[in-house]
Amino acid sequence: MPNEDTAGPLPLVVVPGMLCDADLWSEVAFPAGHDVHHVALRRPDVGALAEDVLAAVEGPFVLVGLSLGAIVGFEALRRAPGRVAGLCVMATNAAAPRPEQYTAWRELDELITAGRFPDVVERTLPDMFPDRSPTPEGARRYREMARSVGADAARAQLAAQATRSDAAEVLRATRCPTVVLAGARDTLCPPAFHRRVADAVPGARLTLLPDAGHLLPWQQPGAVTAALRDLVAAASVAGPSATRP
Image (cartoon, rainbow, N blue to C red):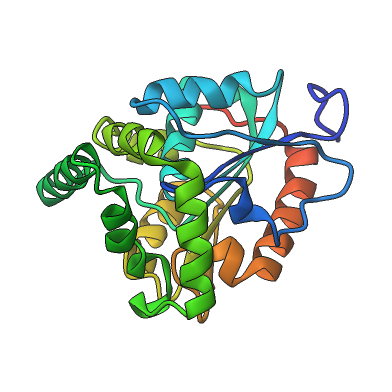
């Protein structure tokens, strides 16, 4: 039966990764007839960002997140599982931060504080592309998008990264249709990270995308489009997530 809690087509709440904005999704054809709400990452706390996600729409929705955006999505799911009717996460990591990550984020923040935001963009750029090998056009697009996001938002995103926690428990309790997308050549968040996510969520579907790195909506937009189409169809009849009693 259709989801009785949904008054119309489920909206999509879409959350990008660090140093990314809505342009990340410009080549993805979102399912026709479904409103799409983009959430910017501009607060220094994953919990606050999760509240931004939950405030983007009323009622149930399909949550789509990449990298930090997916991490924010895990926190939104922790806080309001009954609101999430479908989940698509990609290029991400559901584990708590590692010590070396805290160190790296502090170093990047220090560069921004010193007025060297362009250096931060260049340091992060290789990890966005398959095998850390960007094409000239891909590098140009990433630099342009990162400049649009800006130094202030980048500092907030670095701070937010440090507030995240392990999402394994909430994923094990998730019952909504879930799709996990991984780039086969993503060196920042390799396929093993995504297998752990898919293994944790009952019934989740893991899709490994060949010749793709971290920025899947740019590098495999057709595959992302197809995954979202199938997910929205499943979510429209399944109803929102529930947690274990």
